[in-house]
Image (cartoon, rainbow, N blue to C red):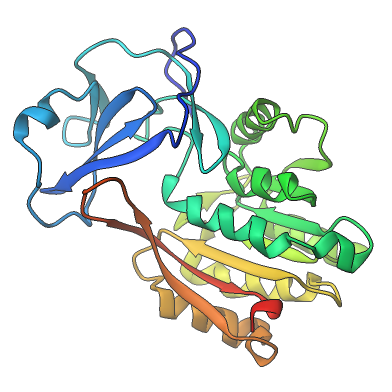
Length: 299
């Protein structure tokens, strides 16, 4: 994922560095630290609540109509830092309109920390957490900070490097995190042959993606197989499975049904499911992905 060049930006502001300012007419106005950005948002089918002048004052906007490009009202640094949900991230504008963070995941990061609370004492060792399609590492950081040993797996070498930078920002540069650049299904197959097990598994599969060796991943075709492998890798003392998605067909009920039908974990505890939301101040919440999570201690 290509980052836009430029110098470093300001240090993160105190408090939460992300805020949904407004949304509507197929767009969202967001604050990332000191900068306000406008990005497309298909879910925002309503009318904006704030004045047009507030949108016009945004520092930059991402234009998909004119060839996927950022349009700048004023210059932005190539990189800057924000603190979101108690975690620090290095952000950069990319050619896809992303910034290196999915802030709708912040409730999941808090949930991971809560689910891992007390696990080390109960297991007599650090819980082993597998984070698949791990992107820039939000779930990895949450788990490592909670005392887990983490295997961070992503097919993109650039994203794994970015995640390691985020770990260093959070004082977790020496934490027990294994950084793995590999196709997820290929990695899972190898772990099954090694008879490796994990106490908790996090996965956020893409709608469509490519592995390190050109493997193609289509969620409708591959997710069931991926979950079957994950279920076989769970230890005898499982802590949780967390499945999230940004694929429109993967509704909360669909994700929960995937977990029920493929892993059989619902026989041991209920499965929570719902929407992930972008929120902020008095802005209307924007649905941005879905989740399903299984937590035996919560059942």
